Image (cartoon, rainbow, N blue to C red; front, top):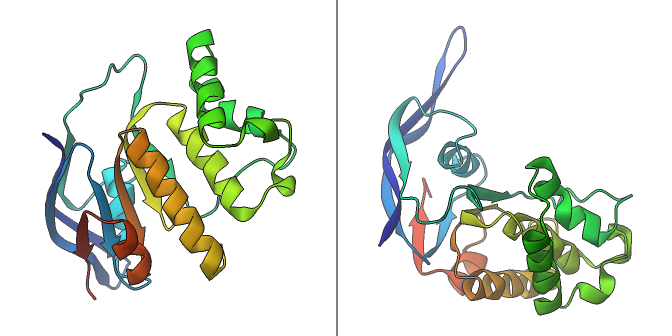
Length: 210
């Protein structure tokens, strides 16, 4: 079943004297459960495309539509995982993971039990009272992902989430994150400039301006 439709996306940035074309006629669809990697060099418009899909910015023209199959009262359409984990260093793992739910005013017993289950499933429960500085880079990324999953997003968006890690850690973290996403049966779009990273996890590879 098609979950996301990206149709004829164009994006131009304007200055007083010039116009820069960032994206030109991007069209593709995403089926439920797909893990799609969008690959291209720095500056080609990958993050711009993700921001458009997430609704953070509007395209010059074109449309993004999502086929809702979750209960809007208990989930969100998009969950965004950035290049940096953006964990608060003074908060414990537990409080970091609950942060999105607090902001959305969705702290319920059901959601807290779900967070506990996620932390236990992915070997972080015993670290729930640790602060981020006590974790490895890969563990921090797992915490950031669980914080996003806690909101029960229909579609996960990952903007080069492993770029801050060294090569070996990046391979291990990307494999762990991929397995978590598939186990939780989430649809995901990831952008990266690393072809090997993309190929290791993809079901569909989209190359932009390579």
